Each structure stands twice: as structure tokens, then as C-alpha cells.
Image (cartoon, rainbow over all chains, first blue to last red; front, top):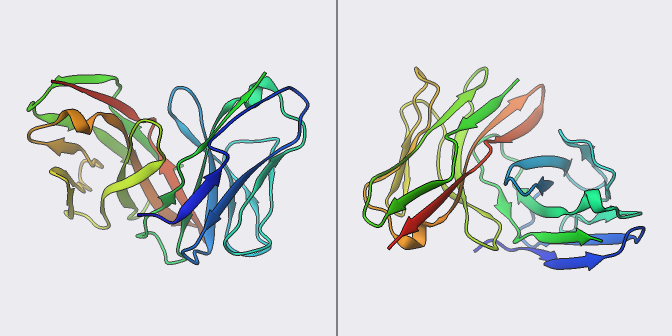
Amino acid sequence: EADIYQTPRYLVIGTGKKITLECSQTMGHDKMYWYQQDPGMELHLIHYSYGVNSTEKGDLSSESTVSRIRTEHFPLTLESARPSHTSQYLCASTRQDGNTGELFFGEGSRLTVL
Amino acid sequence: GNSVTQMEGPVTLSEEAFLTINCTYTATGYPSLFWYVQYPGEGLQLLLKATKADDKGSNKGFEATYRKETTSFHLEKGSVQVSDSAVYFCALRQTIQGAQKLVFGQGTRLTINP
């Protein structure tokens, strides 16, 4: 079982609200990721981190921001949510050990913006 | 750039049927290849992987062989069960200019009818 947790699992909010999606892992992994999964199932990398104080933009442009102050914690924030942000957000982590390690995923946070 | 192309879904089969989900990739060098599975309402979890040419990954009756000559990593199972209903993602992982990249295919939704 993977020890990576996301909260909330489901969130319905109104336009203009600020939201933070939490992601925590207890495996001591250096690398963490945020993926956005659209209704067609495709996964898009929006942010990643190599370790504490490291954050990078992913392949898909996103209005969200992330921070990595502690190894185990990688929250994602939307300052002003819009209906176009409605999606499922998946957090993942892996050890810093080359190409062969697997990613461990959280169960996802499904965001609906009205 | 690197890319992964999966067989278009959805795929619907009867229980005990033979399953093949095609996956081909484009990459320079020697990426590692993965199949992830996403059950309804959950995050992704690793199903199997192969890290070099001719390796065969296997798990839960599923198999996939890393074929460098055809740049393929097709997923197969001899006799599917209703519990195999899920979305399956093919992925590759490779280090490019010092950055580790994990690229997913678009996913294939599999439904098994009793």
C-alpha cells in the first residue's frame, strides 16, 4: 500500500474562491508531482518538485501554484478558482533513483467549480 | 519528443476472454516502460514494469514485453475477470538533460461483462 494521501477527496466551490489541495507522503520520497486528469482520462503533468524548496512547471500550463517547504508535503493552491479548473488532481511521489522507480499515487482530489 | 500511444478505447469483453491493449512509444535511448491501472474512484497504481529490451513484466496474470525493435509494450491477459474493469495507462520514464520525465498514454478504459 502506498503511503500518500490527498485531501479533500471531493470539493465543490464557487467561482473566485481560493482553494488548497493537500498532498502528503510518509515514504521520504524526494520527487513529487501533480497531475491534472481531464474527463477523457488523459493525465497532464502540471507541477513537480525534486525536493525541499524545489518546484518546477510541468508540461501543461496551469494557473495553480505549489510549494515544497517540507519533504513530505506538496500542496497545490488556486488563488481564484474558475469553472475551467474543474478536474481531478492526482499527486504522486517517487525516490530520486533514476528511471526505474515507480510512481506512487494518491487517490486524487476531484474539484468542481460552479 | 517522447510520446506514448495507446489503443483507443473503450474496450468491452466478456469474462474469460483474451485481452490485448496495444502500446507503442517514441523515445531516444532506453526508457523504462510501465503499465498503471486506475480502478473506479481511485488513483493510479503500478501494474507492471520493464526496464530494458526483452524484459517481461508480469503481475496479477497480466504480462507485457519490452520490444525495442517494434517500440512496443503491449499488455496481455489470457483470461480476464470482471474485477479487471478499470482504466489502463501505458507510460515511459526517461532522463532527458538531467530531468526525469514520465510520459503517459491517453488511457484505455476496459469493461468486463460477466
